[in-house]
Length: 235
Image (cartoon, rainbow, N blue to C red; front, side, top):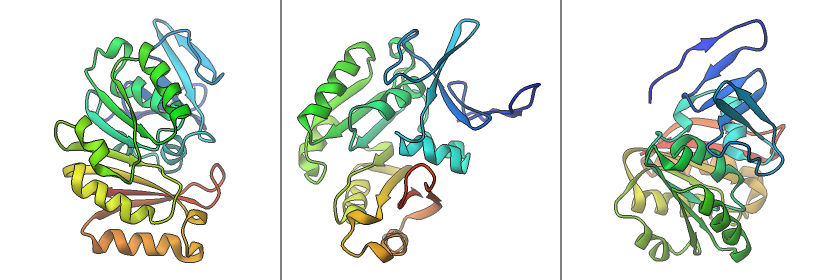
């Protein structure tokens, strides 16, 4: 991924993760692939021919992680293939689409969005109709056989946000099955979802390293998501 420099002007400092995602002061923005459309009432801002859409860290674990860590390596490559487990209603998916696919998917990216909830997948289907490159999949993330038909090969980027027990073990199995060598994976872990919540984060770190993953960063999302940790690993 091409690195963009930190710029300072008269107003807030700008940090560009790519030409499509940036931090401005304390706010995160993605370059809107569907100009004039605000998905959840988020702010839009025009700069010449470009339009930026504010990415809310209170409704997106990835946004919170980017603002906390300021590491561009959290993001997938533009034009790449992503597997997103636990898509919800598609808010974060839409911002990833801004970065990975762009307007009319001119970047050629793919986001495979998996969720067990028919209501959530209906929302993602509606989203995909105006944002090509998003592939909605109604499936149980724990059943990897139901996900595999939608992947032609292993992928370089995986995100898992599934609020259930044994999240770490599911994450490891998913990465072993679908993550390419050298690929990046993000686990959003809610301690309250684990049987032993008090030691959930330490257990997760030990289990991931014992499974052979390199732990790049452990990001505490406190302030936006309480008792949530984002684990950034490389296979």
